[in-house]
Length: 253
Image 1 (cartoon, one colour):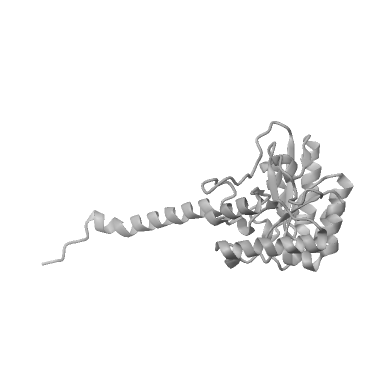
Image 2 (cartoon, one colour):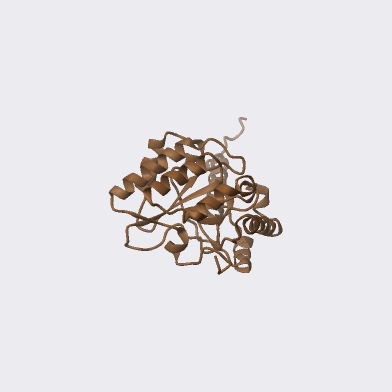
């Protein structure tokens, strides 16, 4: 006698497991790495305003010559920006960081090493923040109040730490999801302009992790974005001004 064929429920069980697993992974990603999720705590990616103003931000630097090239074009256009810098990179390029401060830009912290294993545990994350603080203080005489975690990765411990260290956590919207891989400047700029809204915080990368890397497309795209948004009537500001918070934790700066 032939064995009974699997019933509909038995046939669909692996498919149901796959769907449930996919949903769980997507939900986990959304919670801890999406630019938009607020499930674990406040993580501003935009400021509610009707004013045509945006904040351009740059992560993973300083990374010369690209950070300096961005600084040159921003200076020529009179555009202020916010640079979320890696402590180890500031140690390599302190004069570039000092130049940005002199030019009127705001520096935020992006941790010390930009290593993912240093972003999850509360103790190692505290060490990342404090080591970066020490670098900023030693080379620049300031302690950033703005903190953007690498990869936008956050855990409940991050929000506790932010309260203890008086840090303002900052998210944003990526100029282009593949910008770190350096597609053409036109592709990056087209997507960044399409995302821009009053109060937007737009994320570019002037470096790559803590290693540096070619950011020529980002440099060229930044100029295109500044020109196009200016033509559309947008103004530019820094994240601290957009959110109405102080840029540094030492008040004299």
